[in-house]
Image (cartoon, rainbow, N blue to C red; front, side, top):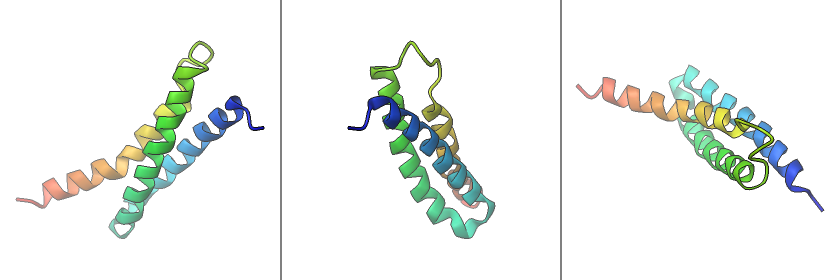
Amino acid sequence: MISHRFVYKLLGYLSIVIGILAALSIYRIQFAFYGIALGILGFIVSGINIFLNTRYYYEEEKYPKGYLGMVLSSLPVLFMLFVIMKHRN
């Protein structure tokens, strides 16, 4: 049986890796579609990690890795918003 701690740690590191890949996708505009898709996946994985931290490990770790993963996963979305607003005028 897989323990909650293993899933929590795995999702924490996975959210950071997905977030880094999503953040790297803004390097070229051609990869924006993949970056948005990775960003959505990163939001889901980070949300589950933050939920597990709140439910089981709140007192052990002050800031779960899911927060960093969520920030990194939001970069492609913010980049696309910036590009759309910049070229709108």
